[in-house]
Amino acid sequence: KTRLRKGAVKLRAVDYAERHGFMKGLVKNIIHDPGRGAPMCEVVFHDPYRYKLTKEKWVAVEGLHTGQFVYCGSKAQLSVGNCLPLGKMPEGTVMSMCEDKAADRGRLARASGCSCMVVGHSDDGKKTRI
Image 1: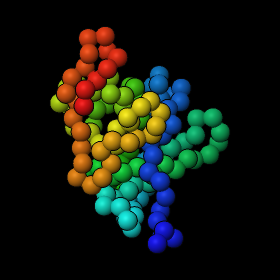
Image 2 (image 1 turned 135 degrees about the vertical axis):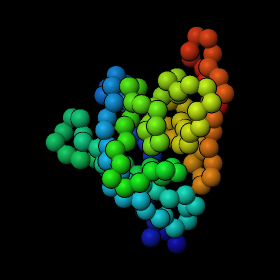
Image 3 (image 1 turned 30 degrees about the vertical axis):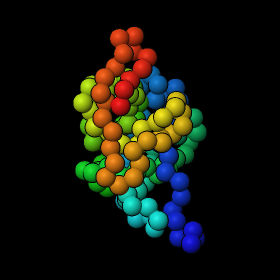
Image 4 (image 1 turned 90 degrees about the vertical axis):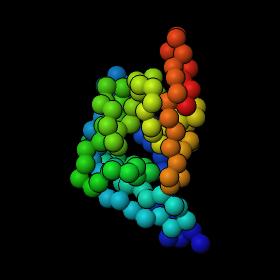
């Protein structure tokens, strides 16, 4: 049955603010979705273009709690819950909900207990092994 499911889990669509800075979001709720092993969290962001709040559903990582601020973007710090580009992460970083191709909003390591690790970056900075 699908009537009780909460919806699709996606990362933020990458915009100008995320490419050149960061966006601050607030974790409002941690939700159980029937049919999904991993818990979901609802993160609220200010829309950078209109006067409104946008809600995103993410996979809740271990250590994330309600009331926590999470940051998305190239200038965000490396900490639990934050979302930043692969090129900015050092080798050995463990992450989940990683994009396979640019702007697909998260395809790899989405199930409960799954994670992937940055193995290395190429010298030109265009490719990363995970």
